[in-house]
Length: 400
Image (cartoon, rainbow, N blue to C red; front, side):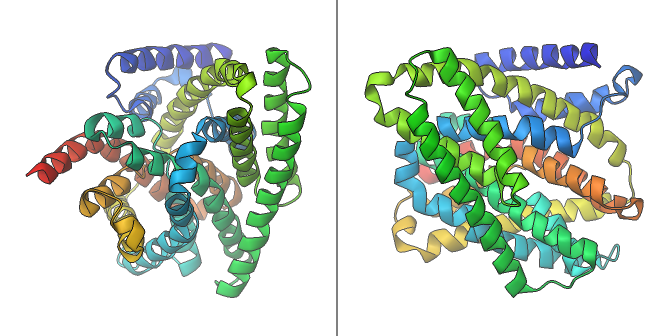
């Protein structure tokens, strides 16, 4: 397996190097497509992506890096809309999408409401990865890109809480109960946030105990992974803990002007880990997805993909038009809503939740796995390719 992983890293290096020159290649999409191709080569058949690998190895690092590198200024400027989209907005999207899937699926296969909502929970987290740079370059609008990136950073935590609650209902056969759902949601969410705040405060104090940058990087590794594992062991959201911890560190770094070298040292390490992990992860997603993409319900998968865009468009549009300050904040409301909708690409968190479902349910629910993989792959390919021409078209439309 070591040799195969080295080859995957080499492929990732080549793709990222090509992207470095143009900044227009949606790297995750290219890696997934290459992974689909590699699945036909027997040499890579031993590679397998599991829930444990994604949650215990990849996610803590990717979440922590995104959180501590997100500019505090941008978070302060857009905290309201980012919070709304990634919490209440995500729940609204899940309900819209889940109910829509429940109604539509009856024309193809029989899915319960809980199963439909569970499928929706897998498909609602966003992972823009490389498209934010495309949005900035094609539109010049950094605010929209910051909102998309900030939302993605926070909504991972919300989506995993939704998923765990719905998965428990699905396994026990319990009917969807909104009151129970809200109670569990608040417990798991606020528990993760509180642990993140506590560990973030501790990290902000002890990171200054040494001036050795190498040891500060070591501490960031311990806290990012340790915080995630601790929260999960206590039954609350490790994702939210890691994100809050990273944001706390970002604030502390910005505040400590005399120690600007901290961020440079952290970046020196985590900016290597991020593309390394993303390369392996998305190539493995392509390799593993291939086996599930040969199924008879592609018509339903295409409809569900369309519904994910429609549900997100309604949610984003509803918030922007409902809140007067946000409505007047953008140059063109329709263009903003369309770009934020299209940039809501499914990625690493959706796959993590999907692999969790795969491990938990019996083979009779393979259709749920196949539908999820199909929609995720469609999202990665169609939305990644479409975001640049869409932004160019909408920019020209606005100038008329």
